[in-house]
Length: 466
Image (tube, rainbow, N blue to C red; front, side):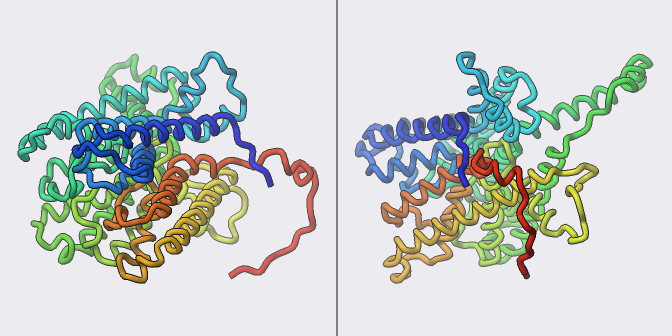
């Protein structure tokens, strides 16, 4: 079986590789560090890939970076976060190149309905929305950080606003955000930025349009002309995609917060007041959606929280957003298909709509291939870190957590990242790259190599399962 690599996908990989080369070169320079001494090549490469893949894993203490180094990190995060969302828009907007039907269909699958609008208008809307939300977040964070006694409140507010909205997880402190575990305004602001960045521009636009229509009708419901116009125009409702995304986001956020609150009430959250326990449980539930910040050390959580954290990280955010993972809609379709009755025939129906079999097939394919990648990287790390595992420096559960965090571009760690050897760091870099750009490649359909099979049928035969 052969796979056809279309030009849009190839250019996307080129874009991220170009950013990785630039980022690695800059992190090799002495001016990026307070000590004036550049990092090793492997560490510089790891930091660059972690930034452009909006992961947040770090092999270096964040305190070693100078102001210039933090600016470079912030710009790479912005370029990587916006890059995946806007790349296809920019590619389509290029006047010098005629876009093929395959590329248009490829982009439509990524953006859902958003690719049907004017490309230039879509690009301006994405960039404008991003800058507006990040500016508002930076302003609030600067105020709250100033109240907390932070002297660099303006710069750190901008830095945290960009990294949280892009679901990157980098914080300019050695302890990430653990010093703000009791600062409710900072935690809530970051939660809102993470959720907004991970919801997806398609859903944001669809939700805003639906709310605007409903508010307009409510405002002018007593106007005879508006009633007549409303009766003639079709009713605006959320698309199935938006409803699934909002449902999954709400379920994962609040059910996860409830679970973490119950599991860690007398454990990791034991020293907090009731209100701060609730906020930290909510923050843990949100940050696992590929953001990667932590207000409480991940090593202090119970085994049950560890297991749920793996599931949350693997799931990730939503399509067309800053978040990574296999995406909430993929998990939703796989679960619906898995619990489907064996007597059900034809296409799967959800919320009054039929779901095409191709969408279900892609969801199952993404999940299986992602699990294969995770297994391959985990085995590679276990082989590479045999001596450390035997010595008890860290455990295999730590490696599994690190691998899932890297592939899902979450960025959470149990503190073993700096202790990994060079080969393991390179493998994790590949996992981050695959998690950020490879998910799109996973949905690619086979090319033209199976024309014969398409025109003929083979004898049917069953395989025993279960």
